Every structure is written in C-alpha cells, then in structure tokens.
Amino acid sequence: MFSRSVLIGATLLTSTLAWNTDVHNQIGFMAETFFTSATTSILAEILEPQYNKSVGRSAAWADAYAHTSEGHFSYQWHWIDTHDRAPEYCHLDYSKDCAKGGCVVSAIANQTGILRDCIQDVKSASLSGGTNLTCSYALKWIAHFFGDIHQPLHANGRAVGGNTYKVIFGDRSTQLHAVWDGYIPYFAANVSKPFSNQSIDPFFTGLVSRIRKDEFYTMPYMWLACSDPSTSEECATIWAKESNKWDCDYVYSRVQNNTDLGTSGYATGAVPIVELQISKAALRLGTWLNKLVEGVKYVSEEQEIIEL
Ligand SMILES: *[C@@H]1O[C@H](CO)[C@@H](O)[C@H](O)[C@H]1NC(C)=O
Ligand SMILES: *[C@@H]1O[C@H](CO)[C@@H](O)[C@H](O)[C@H]1NC(C)=O
Ligand SMILES: *[C@@H]1O[C@H](CO)[C@@H](O)[C@H](O)[C@H]1NC(C)=O
Ligand SMILES: *[C@@H]1O[C@H](CO)[C@@H](O)[C@H](O)[C@H]1NC(C)=O
Ligand SMILES: *[C@@H]1O[C@H](CO)[C@@H](O)[C@H](O)[C@H]1NC(C)=O
Ligand SMILES: *[C@@H]1O[C@H](CO)[C@@H](O)[C@H](O)[C@H]1NC(C)=O
Image (cartoon, rainbow, N blue to C red; front, side, top):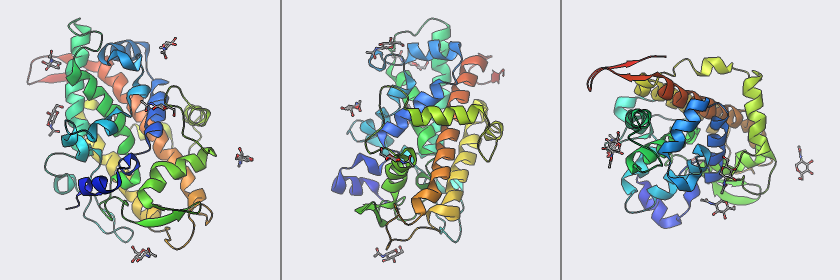
C-alpha cells in the first residue's frame, strides 16, 4: 500500500511520523504522575542511564530510531493503515489492516510481552542499570506507541495518514498529519514554541488535574475498560478503533483545504479531541505499566497468570 519511507526520503521531517517529539515526551511525563512507587523504581532499572530514570524523557526515542538504518524495521510500527473511506465510512480491521512486518497494535502487544519478562528480570535482580537494550527499547517503544495509537491520523490509511493531504494552518502551507501532530496541540496550549523535553509543561499538568477531577465529557475510569496487559492485542485494537472513528467524526469530515484551519474554527473544534486523546494515552500508559509491574507472576513459559 502506501510507502511512507519514500515520503520521508523526500521531506526528512520527523513531524510526519508521530505527535511531535515534545508531545510524546509530555505524554510520558503525564503517565509518570500515575505511576506507583514500585513502577517508578522498577522502570528506572530498565531505562538506559541517559534518561535519568524518566519514561517521559525516553518517549521520543522511537522516532529518531525509526529514521536510522538499524531501526528502519520499526518505522511501520508507528501506525495502522485502515482500508476504509473517511469521512464517509470508518472501519478498522486488525487482521486485515495490520501490515506484514507489524503495526502499532501488534507492536504494543509484542513489546508488552517483552517488557513483562524484563520486569521479572528486575524483580529477580538479574537486570539493573538499563543494561539490557531489548528491555530498554521495549519500554521506550511502549511509551511512544501509546501516544501514536491515540493520534487519529495514525489509525487511518487515507492520504498516507494525512501526510499528503495539503492544508493551510496559521498562514502556513502544511499537511493534515502535521496539523494533528503539532499545530493543534500548540494551539490548544496557546504556545508558540515546543514543549519541554525535560519536565512536564503546565498545559499537561492541567490535563492531569482534569483527569483526576473527572473533568472530561467521558469518564476516565471508562477509558480503562480494557487495560489488562494480558489482553494487549484486544486493548490496542479498541484504542486504535477509537482513534479511527475521529477521522470520520471530525478530522476528515470538518477539514477544508481552501481555508486556514487555524482561524476557520477547525482548530478550536479539534482542541477537546486532542486533549481527550492525549489524556487517554497518558492514563492508559501509566495504568498499563502499573499493572505490568504489580501483576505479573510466572507459572511457566507457556502459561502465565496475571494477578491484578
Ligand atoms: C535526574 O533526576 C533527579 C530526580 O529524579 C534530579 O534531581 C536530577 O536533577 C536529574 N538530573 C538531570 C541531569 O536532569
Ligand atoms: C517483536 O519484538 C522483537 C524485539 O524487539 C522484534 O525483533 C520482532 O520483530 C517483533 N515482532 C513483531 C511481530 O513485532
Ligand atoms: C534481555 O532481556 C530479555 C527479556 O528478559 C531476555 O530475553 C534477553 O536474553 C536479555 N538479553 C541479554 C543480553 O541479557
Ligand atoms: C495566548 O497567548 C497570548 C500571548 O502569550 C496572549 O496574549 C493571549 O491572551 C493568550 N490567549 C488565550 C486564549 O489564553
Ligand atoms: C530537547 O530540547 C532541546 C531544546 O529545544 C533541544 O535542543 C534538544 O535537542 C532536545 N533533546 C532531545 C533529545 O530531543
Ligand atoms: C482538496 O482536497 C480534495 C480532496 O482530497 C482534493 O480533491 C482537492 O484537490 C484539494 N484541493 C486543494 C486545493 O488541495
């Protein structure tokens, strides 16, 4: 189907790949606020030292890695391309839409399984100090893919995930994917420069406090209806379907490529969607990692019991 590597070769824009890197960092920082102390200390032993024990700081690595020749195999893990017809018809079918070689749903499932082993290794004192790269990568990928799977244009095949759909935003020519990756989050936060990649930004602290105070139009506990890491494929499919639905409900149904999306009302209408999707990503990530740390108990190689 679509070959994004061609596109990347032509544009060399990391923004064509995912929420902007700083937004990924911020989703990770938000997730950290939900960690139990056990999660914080166990994950600190999994990450390489350069991240100073912070999942948020590590959450953008996957984009840079996907653009190296060593990491190119993971490039397609950042999205799932549906074969539907937004905005008329949105439909995600995991078994048909997940490309050979993987997609964001299978990658979350695969890396969750690896990370579970890594957590066992830390618990049994055979891993510390971030010395096992398979483990550090698994955590960094999960932190990143929880962000991606909540970006509506990472769950839609139209126009290469919106990358070739030209639009205008704030007087600039850009494309729809970049609008959702960065322009709208910056618009929502009313900032003119990127967010920090070192610590949580006030806009995201605000989202955390809204999650805790139940100030979204859907209730945060319902976002966790599927949150058992032993059913990772099922949960990730549900989350990708939610994202895909936004492509019909807003992203492509309201877009106009002959008006400025920054001033036409499109951006304003997109703010609650972006805030919701980012908040879901962060709460789900924090909860997922807590459950992995708390719950995993091995019975044998083949059979696992998850205690929650
Ligand atoms: C690393 O994190 C600790 C607290 O977790 C903080 O005190 C320290 O300043 C951080 N170091 C760097 C280089 O950010
Ligand atoms: C699962 O993860 C391993 C280690 O990162 C990787 O080598 C493998 O290709 C992955 N498989 C799938 C289907 O994602
Ligand atoms: C890293 O951890 C994984 C998961 O436990 C394990 O399968 C692998 O053998 C480890 N690699 C090294 C080099 O120890
Ligand atoms: C956005 O920021 C600008 C400049 O920092 C400020 O003048 C303006 O009042 C802000 N708008 C909102 C809606 O907060
Ligand atoms: C973090 O942000 C600073 C300032 O924008 C930038 O110079 C630096 O390259 C970023 N670090 C990473 C790892 O992206
Ligand atoms: C606007 O989008 C439609 C549908 O993708 C396309 O057919 C049309 O050529 C676009 N117009 C411009 C000016 O890009």
